[in-house]
Image (cartoon, rainbow, N blue to C red):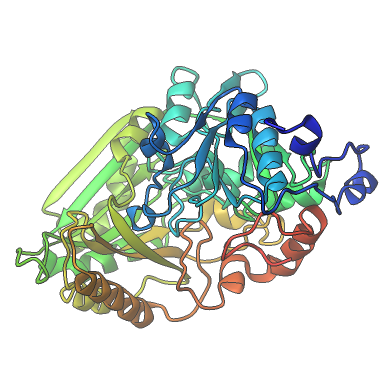
Length: 492
C-alpha cells in the first residue's frame, strides 16, 4: 500500500459530543500505529495543504533550525508547513500512526530547544491570520502570528493587547506561558486577555475552549505553557484602546552601576502601574576567552502611559541620585513605542536562568560576577536583567489562571551566550559562571515557564507553584497517554 488511508491518518481520532462527558469518552484512543514500519513521508506531504519540507529541499534549513542555535543539531525528518487546523490534525494523526516523535512550533524561540525534534516539526508559522473587531474590542489571531505581525495587523486601529518586546517571538508560545512586556504593569499579561482558543487534542478532536466551554482547559491555557495539552491553532483576545505613550531609555557609566540600580528600584517602589521598567547589567566584547576587551553597561528603559512631563517628574529622583550619561524621553504613538523598544533575545547559542523576586538581586554581587565573565565570541555577551512586575499583573488572583507568579516585584533573567566558534572549554566556562552567578543572586524561588531552563532543580514547582496539582489534573484528563511530552512537560 503506497499511501496511508484516511482511517490510518485519523487513528485515535474520535467524534465526541460537546461537554465534559464527551471529553471523557475520547480519553483512551487506540491508534493503529505502524511502529516498526518506515514512515510514509510522501503520503503526509500529499495530504497537507501547506506542504512538507524534507532534508535537502529548498527552505528546509530555514524552517528546521530552532532560534537557540545551541540545539541546531536537532534536525527533523520533515517540517509540516500547516496552512490551517486541518493540516495540524493531519500532521498529528500521521505522527501518531507511525509513532514518529514530533514537536509543535509557532515562533521557535523555545529557550530550552523543546520546539526542535528529530521526527516531525509541526510548524504553525504560516497560520498568521488576524481579524480585528473594533466595535467588540476583540482580536482573533492565527497561531503562527509573531509580535511583529500583530503590531502590523493593529496599525491604524488604535487598539492594543499586551505582548512581548522581541519582534520575532511567537504570540502563541508567549500567551500560553503567561506573556509579559512593557505594557503588562498597565494592561496585564497576554494570557489575561484570552477570551477563547481553538485547540487540537491528541485524539484529533478540535475544541473551542472558553470560560464556559471546557473551562478547566481554558484555565490551563492561561499560563500552563505551550505543548502540554494539545496544539492551539487560534486565539481571540480582548483589546484595549490606546493613544500616545512615552518611551524612556537611560544609561550610566559602569562605575555607577550599583547606585543606578538602587535609584531605579527606589523609584519603582512608589511608581504608578502606568510605568514599566527593564533594568539591565550587561557585558559584551569577548572577554578573556577571546582576548577581547570587555565592555560593561548598565541601562534602564520602559514605557509610560502618559505625557512626557509626568514621566520626567517620576524619574526626577533617579536623575538627582545618579545623573545618566545617556537620557532619552520621547512621546509617541503606542505602536511606534513598541518598535522603539524592540529587541531580539540573544542570537547564536545561549542559556537563560530566571527567578521571580520580592526585591532586586544585590547589585554589588551582580556587578562582581559580571566583571568575572569568562567571555565568548558571541557579541551578545552576558547579563543580568530585572523586569518590574506588579501593577495589573498582581491584580489577578494567582489561582484564577494557571500563571501563578502574581505577587512578586521583579522577574530576573541571567544569561550567557556563545557561538559555534567557541571551544567546548569556553562554553563550559560560561555555563559554570552562569550557574555560580545564579546561585549567588537567587538560589531559591519560582521561575518563568517561558524562560525554560533544563538545569533548573524542582522545575514543576518553580514554574507552576500552587497551580501544579490542578494542571496535573487537566493534563490527565485531556492528554492521559502523554502524547504531548518533552523533558519539562507538565506531569500527568
